[in-house]
Image (cartoon, rainbow, N blue to C red; front, side):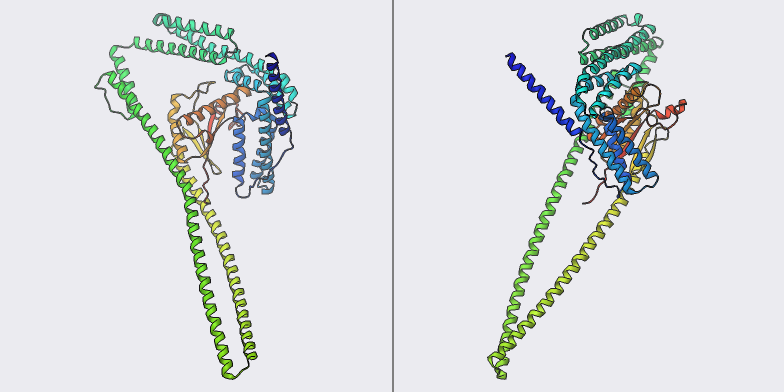
Length: 582
């Protein structure tokens, strides 16, 4: 039995090693540059590269293959600079092609890294999620060790990466536990202190003791079970929720203590009325609070049912459209077949009629020749000579007619080809003009949804950028608060105006704090907006990318509070789908 386990272990390790060697061989190949056409739309070519780089950030290519990703970013900057300076299209094409090749190389390296140092990558992700980047110096040191692993993989030194990944993973794990205790449990302690300060021991002493006991249990569990990460995070999050709930309950209790019963009733009634007004439901303030509550809940349930129904109808319509698109080529093929059969029948009939007329003509000519010969007393030899001459004349006439017919057909084909080319160019120009008009109309409709305080909208080639000015997150967090729902609702409507576009949600921060913390926070906030859109069925997951750029792309100097406020932002980049007629 032990021998079986040993052999199985050896086979597994051998297979893993061979897989790594194969991936490393692929990653170590010379850079393959495939030409990219930029003559039709230089801006579109750069936009594609920029979007792919944003997707690369979401895939963590910037850390799994930092050097190749940095090269691709430099190629993008060079391409943008070439367009600004009015450079040659040939030069632009070479730069964009190189950028795509460098990004592809980064993807290959990242694929190798995900297998070779999977343990370190997982540990890093969990540490960052726990907030380890707040330990700036300590985290930066571990991050440098991690980047050293990925750079060694870029240098095709898998041995070093595999040998040292366990040490890096353990470092990330240790700082993760430290972060969980500092951020989550530290926040719980702060909330408990706040609850005590506002009078929890008098008003809700039982709840206070429960929350305190829960905190102690979670702290002890984390210390005793450092590898039970999922349960650890779940318990910590529950503890924080209960502590925050206690604070709010006590605060509200204090507010009620200072209010008269009538004021409390009016407060509850106003809260229900606000919900009713937002939902467009009936005003039932002449009924009991239970009835008013049921009115709100039923209205919400009805809206959910309506939204689900609309989603289902949308799916049905999309399916019908897809079915029509599939049938359309089949119907065209059937019509073409029928047309070809009709043409073939006409050609056959024409050939038969032509042959019959030709035979009749030959017969009449022959009879006339014989008749003339007999009348003039010609000899049979002269008659045959005359008939031969007539045949030669007829052959010459047919040859000339065939040449003329061939010339006509050639000229007609050339004319048809030229007409087809001109029609294609005209249709392409009309489609381009129509696309520009359509984009301008949609841009105008979408930008009209926002006030100047809510969002700044501008065009970027054939893209629309919505800079969500009034989008605010709690300090250091990526939680979308209810105050942002109205803005995000307008943003959703703006997206729907463009049908089914592709999107990049960009997260940006100011320069306060460490680059690692800023990069992570901006990525988490962009991902939060992405998940909001997905949860509301606005787009599919393959249509939207979330990319956090930290403080890399400032709009204003970070030297002033106003400048830093401008730099903290969410940008939504919408790229409409270009419909082309085949």
